[in-house]
Each structure stands twice: as C-alpha cells, then as structure tokens.
Amino acid sequence: MQTDETASRPRSLGEHHASVPVPEGASLFHKFLAFAGPGYLVSVGYMDPGNWATSIAGGSQFGYTLLSVILLSNLMAIVLQALAARLGIATGLDLAQACRAHYAKPVNLVLFIACELAIIACDLAEVIGTAIALKLLFGIPLVIGCLITALDAVLVLWLMQKGFRWLEAFVIVLILTIMVCFVYELTIAAPAVSELGAALKESGEIVHNQAMLFIAIGIIGATVMPHNLYLHSSIVQTRAYERSETGRRIAIRFATLDSTIALMLALFVNGAILVLAATVFHKTGRTDVVEIEQAYELLAPALGASLATTLFGVALLASGLNSTVTATLAGQIVMEGFLHLKLKPWLQRLLTRGLAIIPVLIVAWLYGDEGTARLLVLSQVILSMQLPFAVVPLVQFVSNRKIMGSFVISRGLAGLAWAIALVIIGLNVKLLADTFVG
Image 1: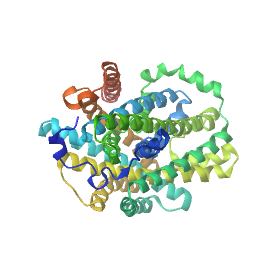
Image 2 (image 1 turned 180 degrees about the vertical axis):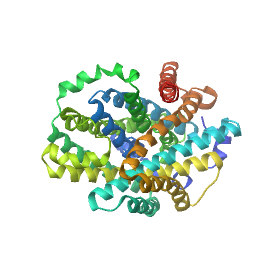
Image 3 (image 1 turned 90 degrees about the vertical axis):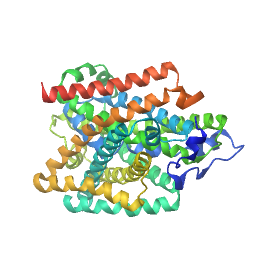
Image 4 (image 1 turned 135 degrees about the vertical axis):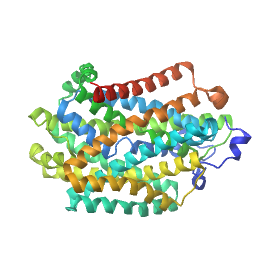
C-alpha cells in the first residue's frame, strides 16, 4: 500500500506516469478500453524471436509433445503478470523500486545484474531474429542486419515522444500482423486436432529426456520473461486511475483482465509456431529443422504456397520490431528503479543494444548462421536461469501484508505462486545437473 514515504520516491517512468486518462463515469467497456494496452506490451515478450527458435526446435524434434509446456508456461505467465500488476498498482512502486526499498544493497546488486543479463539475453534474441528477418526478406547479410538493428533506438524514441498510447498502438498493430500471418500458415498446414489433444497426455517424457528438457526450459525462459515482471509493475501505473483503495481495486481488476487476454493471444502465437513446425516438419521426418532460416526455406515446398514463406518472414520482422519497445522500457525501469540512475533514453537503448550486438557479431562472423541459431536457443535458456531472481522477490512482496496492506494476495494464490517459483527453480536445477554432472 502506498505511504507518504513511497509517494516521495521518484515515480516509475516519471514522464509517462498517470499520462493515460481514465474517463470518470464511463461504462465498464470504455473503462476497460482505457486500461487496455499494458498487457499487450507485456505479451510482446512472450512471442519474440526467442520463442520462435525454441518452438520451432521443439515442434520439429518432438512433434506436439511440448505443446503442454507452452500451455503450462503461459498459465504461469498469466499468474505472475497479474501479481506484477497488483504490486505496481497497490504500492505505487515497480518491482525494481520495491527491491531497492526492501532489500540490502548486496542483494539488490545481485538482482540488478541478473535482470540486466536477462534484458541483454532478450535483446540478443531480438537482434538475431530481426537480422534473420531482414536477410530472408531483403537478402541483407546477417552481420549488416545486426548493425541495422541499432537504429531501432530512433523508432522507439519517436514513439515515446508521441505518447504512451502511440507505443501501445504500434505494438498492437504488429501483434495483429503476426496473428494474421500464422492464421494463414495454420489454415494451409491443417493440423489434426485429435493429435494435439493426445500430445498433452504424453508430456511425462519431458522430465526424463535431457534434449527435450533443454528445449522445454528454453520455452519456459522464452515465455515467462523475468524483465517483463519489472516492466508490467511499472507500465500499469501509466493510467490516471484514482489513487484510492477503491480506485486501485478497480485498476487491478482491469489490468489483470487486460494482461490475461493479451497473454492468451501470445499463447495462440507460440502454440501456432510449434504446431506448424510439428505438422510441416516432424510428421514428414524433418526432425533436424531447428533454425528459423531452415523453417523459412522449407515452408513453401512443404505447404505448396510461396506466400507462406513471405508471411513467415513478415511475422518474424514484426516480432523483432515489437520486442524493441519492451526491451527499451524494461531497461529504463530496471536502471532507474535499482540504481536511481536516469540515463537519456537513446543512450540507455544504445548501451543495451550494443551489449547484445557484440556477441551476435562475433558468433555470426566465426560460425555463421548455424552458430547464431544455437545462440538464439541458448539465450532463452539463460533467460530461464534468471527467472527465480525476479519471481521470488515478486511473490515475497505480494504475499507480505506490511507491503501490500489490504491488497495482499490470499494464501491459496500465494501457495500457487510459490509452487510456480519452485517448478521453475527445480527445472533449472535439473537441467544444470544433467548438463554438468549427468
């Protein structure tokens, strides 16, 4: 619950704080429209190029089996993002600010480093995905494409100057573009619905198969984004809702609905990528398709439609551009929240993107397309490894009555949230044990 001390601290995303009006006396539908938007910015992180790499690899190698992992990770995401929104609205602090307020400096330093690594890993995936899309659509070499991605700072800054609603509109248009592309792909591929249901019953094998577990954890890392929890706890505060107990309860309700609907759209996209790979590649014996470029080249011959590859490339480019917005905002929120350090947006963006571009350029130069494809999947596993450093503080805060006041979550929801945290940590420990000991 917000106190005088909290109110005196710098506001999260100060220039956009309470900048989107919520009409008084409006109908429920119009109020929902006023609150709709942050959920879609959050959902972008759940359908970025990293998701493509892990879902394509999972679908081509193991068919529909890992569909259950996508469903499970999406349900985890819905719960965790709802908690992040609750924290931001109830306390007036984003997750980074809350960590700084309630943890010792050494702990905050570890959490800051972990979150920055997650943002760089996510940015790395976006660099690779966007560069691959530019190569597939326009024939631009991978190395040059990586350098071009640095120019996205101009686009983000222009949108941020126009206002937060412009950011949200840009993101929503690109999400709709991605969805239209995959609706067409799935219509042509025509997967058997009965086989999808059967695959959900065969998910027990995942824990015992190290190769499958590696991809599964990559899917979780690509789906439940650690920095998205910091992002969501901040951007829900862009709404000019009444900062009273009643106003906050209404805001929490609408913010939860907004993120749930948006994440269901992300579930469709992630599931569509895996199902497409399973239908087109795995069922025809092409279990070796683990790279985005392979999928692009083989889609047209497999589906008998040249438009399929073009739409695949367009969706990939839209995915990479979309993720640029959220990575920029997350980087700003984390740096300001943990360090109270406010860099100019263009400088912060170029710094983060530069740290992502350098390893991609090195790998692309030394190992070519195959090396960057493996780096893309690895980045998602790294993201999953960072998840506990965001999930544990979040669950701890929203379960604490002293911090949340009357907005503290119920014991049942707290139990579910801790169970999600333990599942994530357990899977990571098993993967590390199998990799380094097994």
